[in-house]
Length: 130
Length: 283
Ligand SMILES: [Fe+2]
Image (cartoon, rainbow over all chains, first blue to last red; front, side, top):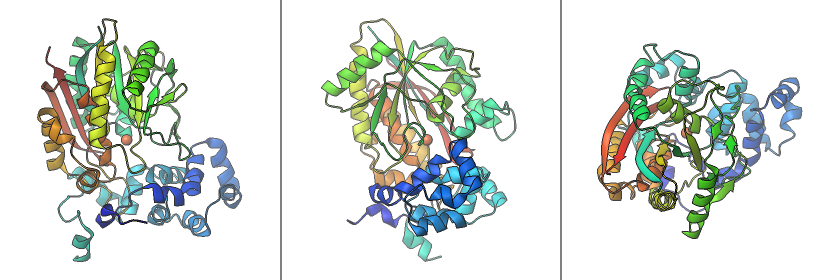
Protein backbone atom coordinates (compact mmCIF):
# COMPACT_ATOMS: atom_id res chain seq x y z
CA UNK A 1 0.00 0.00 0.00
CA UNK A 2 1.35 3.39 -0.92
CA UNK A 3 1.11 6.44 1.27
CA UNK A 4 -2.21 8.22 1.12
CA UNK A 5 -2.44 11.95 1.66
CA UNK A 6 -6.08 11.69 2.72
CA UNK A 7 -5.24 9.45 5.68
CA UNK A 8 -4.51 12.55 7.77
CA UNK A 9 -8.15 13.72 7.66
CA UNK A 10 -9.60 13.02 11.11
CA UNK A 11 -12.67 10.87 11.76
CA UNK A 12 -12.98 9.84 8.13
CA UNK A 13 -12.62 6.58 6.21
CA UNK A 14 -12.02 7.31 2.55
CA UNK A 15 -13.61 4.42 0.66
CA UNK A 16 -10.82 3.73 -1.79
CA UNK A 17 -9.98 0.67 -3.89
CA UNK A 18 -8.18 -1.02 -0.98
CA UNK A 19 -11.17 -0.61 1.34
CA UNK A 20 -13.49 -1.64 -1.48
CA UNK A 21 -11.53 -4.86 -2.00
CA UNK A 22 -11.43 -5.64 1.71
CA UNK A 23 -15.09 -4.82 2.25
CA UNK A 24 -16.54 -6.35 -0.89
CA UNK A 25 -18.58 -9.16 0.72
CA UNK A 26 -19.52 -7.04 3.72
CA UNK A 27 -20.93 -4.41 1.36
CA UNK A 28 -22.70 -6.99 -0.77
CA UNK A 29 -24.24 -8.43 2.41
CA UNK A 30 -25.42 -4.96 3.47
CA UNK A 31 -26.88 -4.09 0.07
CA UNK A 32 -28.76 -7.40 0.02
CA UNK A 33 -30.88 -5.91 2.82
CA UNK A 34 -32.32 -3.46 0.33
CA UNK A 35 -34.64 -6.32 -0.74
CA UNK A 36 -37.48 -7.53 1.47
CA UNK A 37 -36.83 -11.21 0.73
CA UNK A 38 -33.30 -10.84 2.11
CA UNK A 39 -34.43 -8.79 5.09
CA UNK A 40 -36.78 -11.66 5.94
CA UNK A 41 -33.96 -14.19 5.61
CA UNK A 42 -31.74 -12.08 7.89
CA UNK A 43 -34.60 -11.68 10.41
CA UNK A 44 -35.28 -15.42 10.41
CA UNK A 45 -31.68 -16.55 10.77
CA UNK A 46 -28.99 -13.84 10.88
CA UNK A 47 -26.07 -16.28 10.86
CA UNK A 48 -27.43 -18.27 7.93
CA UNK A 49 -27.99 -15.13 5.87
CA UNK A 50 -24.53 -13.76 6.71
CA UNK A 51 -22.94 -17.09 5.74
CA UNK A 52 -24.09 -16.54 2.15
CA UNK A 53 -21.41 -13.83 1.89
CA UNK A 54 -17.68 -14.48 2.27
CA UNK A 55 -17.18 -12.04 5.12
CA UNK A 56 -14.32 -12.31 7.61
CA UNK A 57 -15.14 -13.25 11.21
CA UNK A 58 -14.25 -9.70 12.28
CA UNK A 59 -16.74 -8.28 9.76
CA UNK A 60 -19.46 -10.67 10.95
CA UNK A 61 -18.77 -9.69 14.55
CA UNK A 62 -19.00 -5.99 13.65
CA UNK A 63 -22.40 -6.74 12.06
CA UNK A 64 -23.54 -8.61 15.19
CA UNK A 65 -22.31 -5.75 17.41
CA UNK A 66 -23.69 -3.06 15.07
CA UNK A 67 -20.26 -1.47 15.44
CA UNK A 68 -20.94 1.29 12.89
CA UNK A 69 -17.44 2.76 12.80
CA UNK A 70 -15.91 -0.73 12.98
CA UNK A 71 -17.85 -1.70 9.87
CA UNK A 72 -16.31 1.26 8.00
CA UNK A 73 -12.84 0.39 9.25
CA UNK A 74 -13.26 -3.15 7.92
CA UNK A 75 -14.07 -1.92 4.42
CA UNK A 76 -17.74 -1.07 4.72
CA UNK A 77 -19.06 1.97 2.90
CA UNK A 78 -21.70 4.20 4.46
CA UNK A 79 -24.16 3.84 1.55
CA UNK A 80 -24.05 0.09 2.19
CA UNK A 81 -23.87 -0.02 6.00
CA UNK A 82 -26.80 2.41 6.14
CA UNK A 83 -28.95 -0.42 4.71
CA UNK A 84 -28.15 -2.42 7.87
CA UNK A 85 -29.09 0.70 9.82
CA UNK A 86 -32.37 0.91 7.92
CA UNK A 87 -32.97 -2.78 8.71
CA UNK A 88 -32.79 -1.81 12.39
CA UNK A 89 -35.10 1.13 11.76
CA UNK A 90 -32.34 3.72 12.22
CA UNK A 91 -32.65 6.79 9.98
CA UNK A 92 -29.54 8.25 8.34
CA UNK A 93 -29.22 11.23 10.64
CA UNK A 94 -29.39 9.09 13.78
CA UNK A 95 -26.79 6.77 12.32
CA UNK A 96 -24.54 9.80 11.76
CA UNK A 97 -25.10 10.80 15.39
CA UNK A 98 -24.11 7.32 16.59
CA UNK A 99 -20.96 7.24 14.45
CA UNK A 100 -19.83 10.61 15.76
CA UNK A 101 -20.52 9.61 19.37
CA UNK A 102 -23.26 12.17 19.93
CA UNK A 103 -26.79 11.90 21.19
CA UNK A 104 -29.54 12.16 18.61
CA UNK A 105 -30.69 15.55 19.95
CA UNK A 106 -27.19 17.01 20.25
CA UNK A 107 -26.38 15.97 16.69
CA UNK A 108 -29.63 17.35 15.32
CA UNK A 109 -29.05 20.63 17.12
CA UNK A 110 -25.49 20.83 15.78
CA UNK A 111 -26.83 20.47 12.23
CA UNK A 112 -29.56 23.08 12.69
CA UNK A 113 -26.92 25.43 14.10
CA UNK A 114 -24.84 25.15 10.93
CA UNK A 115 -23.21 21.73 11.17
CA UNK A 116 -19.88 20.52 12.47
CA UNK A 117 -17.46 23.39 11.86
CA UNK A 118 -14.46 22.94 9.61
CA UNK A 119 -12.19 24.78 12.05
CA UNK A 120 -10.24 22.22 14.06
CA UNK A 121 -11.52 19.35 11.94
CA UNK A 122 -9.15 19.35 8.98
CA UNK A 123 -6.16 17.37 10.27
CA UNK A 124 -5.67 14.42 12.61
CA UNK A 125 -3.05 16.48 14.46
CA UNK A 126 -5.79 18.95 15.44
CA UNK A 127 -7.76 16.13 17.09
CA UNK A 128 -4.75 14.74 18.92
CA UNK A 129 -4.26 18.06 20.69
CA UNK A 130 -7.77 17.86 22.16
CA UNK B 1 -29.86 22.93 -34.00
CA UNK B 2 -30.08 21.81 -30.38
CA UNK B 3 -29.10 24.58 -27.98
CA UNK B 4 -27.91 24.47 -24.38
CA UNK B 5 -29.50 27.53 -22.83
CA UNK B 6 -28.89 26.95 -19.12
CA UNK B 7 -27.12 24.96 -16.48
CA UNK B 8 -28.58 24.08 -13.11
CA UNK B 9 -26.67 22.99 -10.03
CA UNK B 10 -28.66 21.34 -7.29
CA UNK B 11 -28.09 19.21 -4.20
CA UNK B 12 -29.98 15.93 -4.32
CA UNK B 13 -30.48 15.24 -0.61
CA UNK B 14 -32.93 12.30 -0.33
CA UNK B 15 -34.76 14.03 2.53
CA UNK B 16 -35.83 16.81 0.11
CA UNK B 17 -37.70 14.18 -1.91
CA UNK B 18 -39.16 12.66 1.25
CA UNK B 19 -40.36 16.09 2.44
CA UNK B 20 -42.16 16.63 -0.88
CA UNK B 21 -43.60 13.11 -0.99
CA UNK B 22 -44.92 13.52 2.58
CA UNK B 23 -46.17 17.08 1.95
CA UNK B 24 -44.27 18.61 4.87
CA UNK B 25 -42.45 21.31 2.92
CA UNK B 26 -44.25 24.05 4.89
CA UNK B 27 -42.86 22.84 8.22
CA UNK B 28 -40.43 25.30 9.85
CA UNK B 29 -37.50 22.94 9.28
CA UNK B 30 -38.18 22.66 5.54
CA UNK B 31 -39.69 26.03 4.71
CA UNK B 32 -36.34 27.83 4.25
CA UNK B 33 -35.10 25.01 1.98
CA UNK B 34 -38.12 25.13 -0.31
CA UNK B 35 -38.50 28.91 -0.30
CA UNK B 36 -35.34 29.03 -2.39
CA UNK B 37 -36.92 26.78 -5.03
CA UNK B 38 -39.94 29.03 -5.71
CA UNK B 39 -37.97 31.19 -8.10
CA UNK B 40 -36.55 28.10 -9.82
CA UNK B 41 -39.93 26.54 -10.55
CA UNK B 42 -41.20 29.79 -11.95
CA UNK B 43 -38.07 30.26 -14.06
CA UNK B 44 -38.34 26.65 -15.24
CA UNK B 45 -41.88 27.21 -16.51
CA UNK B 46 -40.76 30.27 -18.47
CA UNK B 47 -37.67 28.56 -19.87
CA UNK B 48 -39.09 25.10 -20.32
CA UNK B 49 -36.51 22.59 -21.58
CA UNK B 50 -37.27 19.94 -24.17
CA UNK B 51 -34.44 17.81 -22.83
CA UNK B 52 -32.55 17.79 -19.54
CA UNK B 53 -29.06 16.29 -19.59
CA UNK B 54 -28.83 15.25 -15.94
CA UNK B 55 -25.50 14.48 -14.26
CA UNK B 56 -25.98 12.61 -10.98
CA UNK B 57 -24.63 9.71 -9.02
CA UNK B 58 -26.20 6.41 -8.23
CA UNK B 59 -26.13 5.48 -4.52
CA UNK B 60 -25.57 1.71 -4.79
CA UNK B 61 -29.01 1.35 -6.37
CA UNK B 62 -28.41 0.48 -10.04
CA UNK B 63 -24.75 -0.32 -9.35
CA UNK B 64 -23.73 -2.27 -6.26
CA UNK B 65 -20.09 -2.99 -5.43
CA UNK B 66 -19.90 -5.56 -8.23
CA UNK B 67 -19.79 -2.94 -11.01
CA UNK B 68 -18.52 0.62 -10.66
CA UNK B 69 -18.51 2.53 -13.95
CA UNK B 70 -16.91 5.98 -13.77
CA UNK B 71 -19.23 7.52 -16.39
CA UNK B 72 -22.42 5.64 -17.35
CA UNK B 73 -24.75 7.19 -19.93
CA UNK B 74 -28.43 6.24 -19.86
CA UNK B 75 -29.52 5.16 -23.34
CA UNK B 76 -32.71 3.23 -22.46
CA UNK B 77 -36.14 4.42 -23.63
CA UNK B 78 -37.17 5.03 -20.02
CA UNK B 79 -35.97 4.71 -16.45
CA UNK B 80 -38.08 3.61 -13.47
CA UNK B 81 -37.71 5.39 -10.12
CA UNK B 82 -35.84 2.83 -8.01
CA UNK B 83 -36.87 1.13 -4.80
CA UNK B 84 -34.11 2.26 -2.44
CA UNK B 85 -35.39 0.14 0.44
CA UNK B 86 -38.61 1.95 1.30
CA UNK B 87 -40.49 1.62 -2.01
CA UNK B 88 -40.02 3.75 -5.15
CA UNK B 89 -40.66 7.50 -4.88
CA UNK B 90 -44.21 8.31 -6.11
CA UNK B 91 -42.97 10.28 -9.13
CA UNK B 92 -43.29 9.84 -12.91
CA UNK B 93 -41.24 7.42 -14.95
CA UNK B 94 -38.27 9.21 -16.54
CA UNK B 95 -38.39 9.26 -20.36
CA UNK B 96 -35.29 9.59 -22.49
CA UNK B 97 -34.62 11.31 -25.79
CA UNK B 98 -33.17 8.06 -27.02
CA UNK B 99 -31.87 9.21 -30.42
CA UNK B 100 -30.04 12.14 -28.88
CA UNK B 101 -28.63 9.91 -26.13
CA UNK B 102 -27.25 7.52 -28.75
CA UNK B 103 -25.76 10.43 -30.66
CA UNK B 104 -24.10 11.75 -27.49
CA UNK B 105 -22.71 8.30 -26.62
CA UNK B 106 -21.16 7.96 -30.03
CA UNK B 107 -19.85 11.51 -30.10
CA UNK B 108 -18.27 11.27 -26.62
CA UNK B 109 -16.51 7.99 -27.33
CA UNK B 110 -15.09 9.28 -30.61
CA UNK B 111 -13.97 12.34 -28.64
CA UNK B 112 -12.05 9.86 -26.42
CA UNK B 113 -14.34 9.69 -23.40
CA UNK B 114 -14.81 5.96 -22.89
CA UNK B 115 -18.39 5.84 -21.71
CA UNK B 116 -20.33 2.93 -20.26
CA UNK B 117 -23.70 2.61 -22.00
CA UNK B 118 -26.75 1.68 -19.94
CA UNK B 119 -29.64 0.14 -21.86
CA UNK B 120 -31.46 -0.79 -18.66
CA UNK B 121 -31.25 1.18 -15.45
CA UNK B 122 -33.39 2.29 -12.52
CA UNK B 123 -32.77 5.80 -11.25
CA UNK B 124 -32.56 6.79 -7.59
CA UNK B 125 -33.03 10.01 -5.58
CA UNK B 126 -29.83 11.41 -7.09
CA UNK B 127 -31.76 11.93 -10.32
CA UNK B 128 -35.39 12.35 -9.20
CA UNK B 129 -34.83 14.90 -6.41
CA UNK B 130 -33.38 17.62 -8.70
CA UNK B 131 -36.28 17.05 -11.14
CA UNK B 132 -38.72 17.46 -8.24
CA UNK B 133 -36.93 20.66 -7.22
CA UNK B 134 -37.31 22.16 -10.69
CA UNK B 135 -40.65 20.69 -11.83
CA UNK B 136 -42.51 20.63 -8.48
CA UNK B 137 -44.99 18.06 -7.23
CA UNK B 138 -45.77 15.23 -9.65
CA UNK B 139 -47.55 11.91 -9.30
CA UNK B 140 -46.64 8.62 -11.00
CA UNK B 141 -49.49 9.25 -13.48
CA UNK B 142 -48.00 12.60 -14.55
CA UNK B 143 -45.32 13.37 -17.07
CA UNK B 144 -42.16 15.14 -15.91
CA UNK B 145 -42.71 17.62 -18.72
CA UNK B 146 -39.28 17.07 -20.19
CA UNK B 147 -37.19 14.27 -21.65
CA UNK B 148 -34.14 13.35 -19.56
CA UNK B 149 -30.75 11.92 -20.50
CA UNK B 150 -29.07 10.58 -17.34
CA UNK B 151 -25.33 10.46 -16.82
CA UNK B 152 -24.31 8.53 -13.71
CA UNK B 153 -20.87 9.40 -12.28
CA UNK B 154 -19.04 7.28 -9.73
CA UNK B 155 -18.44 9.34 -6.60
CA UNK B 156 -18.88 6.48 -4.10
CA UNK B 157 -15.57 4.69 -4.50
CA UNK B 158 -12.42 6.85 -4.42
CA UNK B 159 -11.24 8.20 -6.74
CA UNK B 160 -14.14 9.87 -8.45
CA UNK B 161 -13.15 11.35 -11.81
CA UNK B 162 -11.21 14.59 -11.25
CA UNK B 163 -12.84 18.00 -11.42
CA UNK B 164 -10.70 18.68 -14.47
CA UNK B 165 -11.84 15.52 -16.25
CA UNK B 166 -15.45 16.28 -15.41
CA UNK B 167 -15.11 19.79 -16.83
CA UNK B 168 -13.55 18.42 -20.04
CA UNK B 169 -16.35 15.88 -20.32
CA UNK B 170 -18.83 18.73 -20.04
CA UNK B 171 -17.10 20.48 -22.94
CA UNK B 172 -17.41 17.32 -25.02
CA UNK B 173 -21.09 16.96 -24.08
CA UNK B 174 -21.61 20.54 -25.29
CA UNK B 175 -20.08 19.68 -28.67
CA UNK B 176 -22.23 16.55 -28.93
CA UNK B 177 -25.48 18.30 -28.07
CA UNK B 178 -24.81 21.32 -30.27
CA UNK B 179 -24.18 19.11 -33.27
CA UNK B 180 -27.69 17.61 -33.04
CA UNK B 181 -29.88 18.94 -35.88
CA UNK B 182 -33.21 19.21 -34.05
CA UNK B 183 -34.25 22.67 -32.79
CA UNK B 184 -34.59 21.88 -29.10
CA UNK B 185 -33.90 23.62 -25.82
CA UNK B 186 -31.52 21.69 -23.56
CA UNK B 187 -30.69 22.27 -19.89
CA UNK B 188 -27.74 20.59 -18.22
CA UNK B 189 -27.97 19.67 -14.52
CA UNK B 190 -25.04 19.05 -12.18
CA UNK B 191 -26.30 17.55 -8.94
CA UNK B 192 -25.09 16.52 -5.49
CA UNK B 193 -23.22 18.32 -2.72
CA UNK B 194 -22.62 20.69 -1.21
CA UNK B 195 -20.41 20.13 1.84
CA UNK B 196 -21.44 17.05 3.79
CA UNK B 197 -20.00 14.03 5.49
CA UNK B 198 -22.28 11.11 6.25
CA UNK B 199 -19.80 8.77 7.91
CA UNK B 200 -17.67 8.15 10.96
CA UNK B 201 -16.68 10.58 13.69
CA UNK B 202 -16.51 13.69 11.52
CA UNK B 203 -20.10 13.16 10.28
CA UNK B 204 -22.08 16.38 10.02
CA UNK B 205 -19.21 18.48 8.68
CA UNK B 206 -20.33 21.63 6.86
CA UNK B 207 -18.10 24.31 5.33
CA UNK B 208 -20.35 27.18 4.25
CA UNK B 209 -17.48 29.56 3.46
CA UNK B 210 -15.90 27.06 1.09
CA UNK B 211 -19.26 26.25 -0.53
CA UNK B 212 -19.98 29.91 -1.29
CA UNK B 213 -16.49 30.44 -2.71
CA UNK B 214 -16.89 27.34 -4.83
CA UNK B 215 -20.11 28.72 -6.32
CA UNK B 216 -18.34 32.03 -7.04
CA UNK B 217 -15.44 30.47 -8.90
CA UNK B 218 -17.59 27.86 -10.64
CA UNK B 219 -19.64 30.68 -12.13
CA UNK B 220 -16.93 33.25 -12.85
CA UNK B 221 -13.62 31.43 -13.00
CA UNK B 222 -14.23 27.82 -14.07
CA UNK B 223 -10.58 27.46 -15.10
CA UNK B 224 -9.77 27.77 -11.40
CA UNK B 225 -12.61 25.51 -10.29
CA UNK B 226 -11.49 22.68 -12.55
CA UNK B 227 -8.14 22.62 -10.73
CA UNK B 228 -9.60 21.76 -7.30
CA UNK B 229 -8.12 18.41 -6.31
CA UNK B 230 -9.73 15.50 -4.51
CA UNK B 231 -7.83 16.10 -1.29
CA UNK B 232 -9.29 19.60 -1.02
CA UNK B 233 -12.84 18.32 -1.59
CA UNK B 234 -12.39 15.55 0.99
CA UNK B 235 -10.72 17.68 3.64
CA UNK B 236 -12.68 20.92 3.22
CA UNK B 237 -16.15 19.66 2.28
CA UNK B 238 -16.39 16.22 3.90
CA UNK B 239 -16.06 12.78 2.37
CA UNK B 240 -19.36 13.09 0.49
CA UNK B 241 -18.69 16.67 -0.67
CA UNK B 242 -16.71 15.09 -3.52
CA UNK B 243 -20.09 14.90 -5.30
CA UNK B 244 -19.45 18.49 -6.38
CA UNK B 245 -17.21 17.25 -9.21
CA UNK B 246 -20.53 16.67 -10.99
CA UNK B 247 -21.18 20.42 -10.97
CA UNK B 248 -18.04 20.75 -13.10
CA UNK B 249 -19.57 18.59 -15.85
CA UNK B 250 -22.50 20.99 -15.99
CA UNK B 251 -20.22 24.03 -16.02
CA UNK B 252 -18.06 22.56 -18.80
CA UNK B 253 -21.16 22.21 -20.98
CA UNK B 254 -21.89 25.96 -20.77
CA UNK B 255 -20.28 28.98 -22.40
CA UNK B 256 -17.23 30.52 -20.79
CA UNK B 257 -19.30 33.50 -19.64
CA UNK B 258 -22.65 32.81 -18.01
CA UNK B 259 -25.19 34.84 -16.07
CA UNK B 260 -26.06 33.67 -12.59
CA UNK B 261 -29.79 34.30 -12.38
CA UNK B 262 -30.42 32.48 -9.11
CA UNK B 263 -28.51 31.24 -6.09
CA UNK B 264 -29.85 29.47 -3.02
CA UNK B 265 -27.87 28.13 -0.08
CA UNK B 266 -29.19 26.70 3.15
CA UNK B 267 -27.89 24.58 6.04
CA UNK B 268 -29.12 21.99 6.81
CA UNK B 269 -31.24 19.50 4.97
CA UNK B 270 -30.66 16.44 7.12
CA UNK B 271 -26.82 16.15 7.14
CA UNK B 272 -26.13 18.33 4.14
CA UNK B 273 -25.62 21.90 2.95
CA UNK B 274 -28.12 22.58 0.17
CA UNK B 275 -26.71 24.55 -2.76
CA UNK B 276 -28.49 25.55 -5.93
CA UNK B 277 -27.60 27.71 -8.95
CA UNK B 278 -29.30 28.64 -12.21
CA UNK B 279 -26.84 29.80 -14.86
CA UNK B 280 -27.94 31.14 -18.23
CA UNK B 281 -25.79 30.98 -21.32
CA UNK B 282 -25.30 34.27 -23.11
CA UNK B 283 -27.36 34.13 -26.29
FE1 LIG C 1 -25.53 11.85 -3.51
